[in-house]
Amino acid sequence: MTRRRLPLAPLALAAALALPAAADDVYLTNGNVFEDVVARREGGSVVIQLPGGALRLPASRVERIERRDTAQTEYVARRQALAADDGGNAGDWLALARWAREHGLEQGYREAARRAAALDPDLAGLPALMESLGYVRDEGSGPWLTPDELMARRGYVRHGDSWITAGERAELLRAEAEEARLVRERREERARDRALVHLAAAAQAQAEAERARAEAERRPSYGVPVAYGVPVWFFLPDPGHGHGGGHGHDGDHGHPPPVVDRGPGHRGDHNRGGF
Image (cartoon, rainbow, N blue to C red):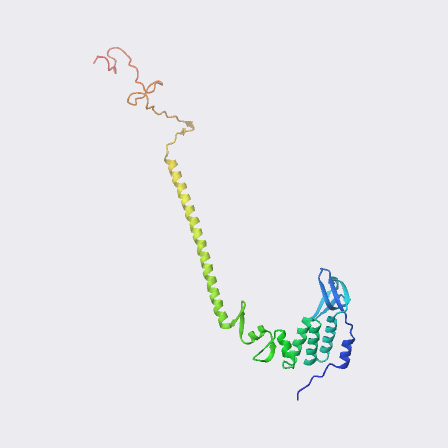
């Protein structure tokens, strides 16, 4: 026996319609504003009723609440009344979706339509509404899904901006990993080449420094040598004076010594007879 959901109970509907068609603008201390919501204070908190659920904030974060009449308040009241009636039926949610669309409540329109589709995906008048929201059905049957949900249901996975099979994605991931490995190896090879160039330049600079030091050591030094703490002076012959490079005497560098006549028979007198 199929259970048929009854329309919204008269008392629940009356309670929903009796709620004031007012909404709130909630101003926060950080400058943000929630517009066209239903807000209430509960102890040290402020509860903001949104189409997708309730948001609870510390009262210290709320600067003020301004109340005004809007369609959002009426939508929230109708939705709460349906939820209180054992979740409502598909027809009631479809009617609420159409009402929300007429009043420019896009989020409420989508929410109520999805509730209707979850209860009865084959409900008359629902397909056109769901298609206008971008929903589709797999092979024309089954639940209403977003395009992404449909592709995932068929076993596809998203890769970038495309849908592909799991095997194709695995192959693409392997190819991307291989390409990343090659790029990394090329980068490391370039780094090694730069390091070798720097090492070669440093080795060349060191070799040139050693050659210069060896050359400096081979050159004659004209400094003043010191022996036992006393400078030792060396006097080099002047090639421009003297005969045959002979050494002079008594400071007369480069000139032959004077001939001294020491008389006959003096040993060493090579200019006189006597022997």
